[in-house]
Length: 120
Image (cartoon, rainbow, N blue to C red):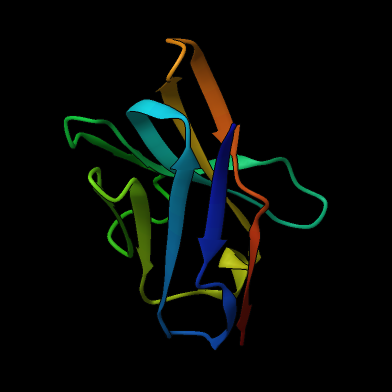
């Protein structure tokens, strides 16, 4: 069984910063792409940023230049540094990883979500 634990969400004023972390644990053989998604009230879940095992990143245009994704593959952790936050960044942020588990199955695992609220 694989679990993700997210942390770092909270309330921040516009222009401020937050750093999200997501740690994976369990029967993981290989950690492939790791990413962050978000879902604002009344909206669909959308990709924020993702990073491959090789370090290639894909960042949404809406956050490009403000958010940075990084990973520590040894610690099975992915980070999202969020700077210059705007009220429209308010959402529940979800971590998602693609792994190969100890039985060589390809799996997609989601975290429980962490709320980010940006006040104006």
